[in-house]
Length: 115
Image 1 (cartoon, helix red, strand yellow):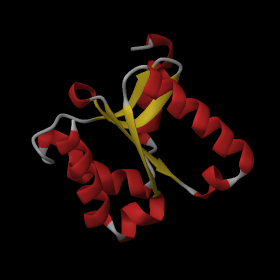
Image 2 (image 1 turned 90 degrees about the horizontal axis):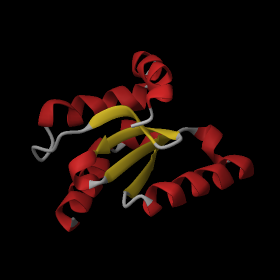
Image 3 (image 1 turned 135 degrees about the horizontal axis):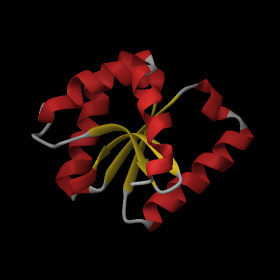
């Protein structure tokens, strides 16, 4: 864990988006598949939205700002770094998390069963 990112990660935990709150309600306290998830967790030079460290699964929730070209390049670089560290990365749009929560959870569950 990168300790220099801890203050920023703690601040992000207090400023979660509606989509992050929605998903966190499902993932916290081992509620989902009895897997321990962490939120706003530093991994290397990045802070990921959610991670199940034991399963090496990262979940990222993306808003509209992730649709522009520069953000796509950055997200691809970030995903490549995480995958090089052995993590699997799932990305969901905020709207999908808010409107189709069950489908998002199904995909997360499927990824956990694949590990």
